Image 1: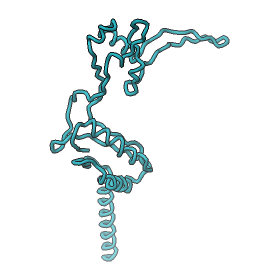
Image 2 (image 1 turned 180 degrees about the horizontal axis):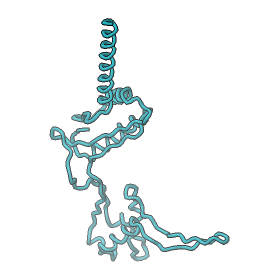
Image 3 (image 1 turned 30 degrees about the vertical axis):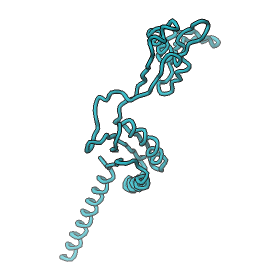
Image 4 (image 1 turned 90 degrees about the horizontal axis):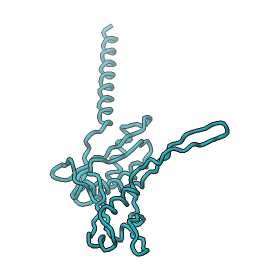
Length: 212
């Protein structure tokens, strides 16, 4: 999938408009995209504002760590009748893609609870890419489509291409999709080879019968 802009923006468009349409088709096992740089949170803060409420950068780090990092709490002994079990307790942090920054408590100043969003501005941005996928100078990602084992891949591939053709009029400018690998083409080629060999064998058999 090629287009202008960042790979992350292309992936967002594909995941929002193309993946749901294809994944809802029968005989589709899975659909996913990859190739875009991961996202990361950036916290912008004013050091003077932090100092004004008696806080510093370490308080921000500690607040983030307490909410996001997984921590081992220890073990607990559970008794059920004559059975005694030891269970390890773990506190899982909040998933990074569903962070509620306004719930992060950084400290207390003059009996007022200071939340992270009071002293900092969080932004979700694309991380620095470690590799690039480009076609004709445009950013690119990959869309992978898997069929079920029972599916007729040749017919299903044709249906998927029809769906993409229906979606194309709504694509952004300079947005395109190219087929990198299509298993149905190999299957179709093999079927044609088998048909040709079977036909050739039948012709040879008929000639042999006529000669006798």
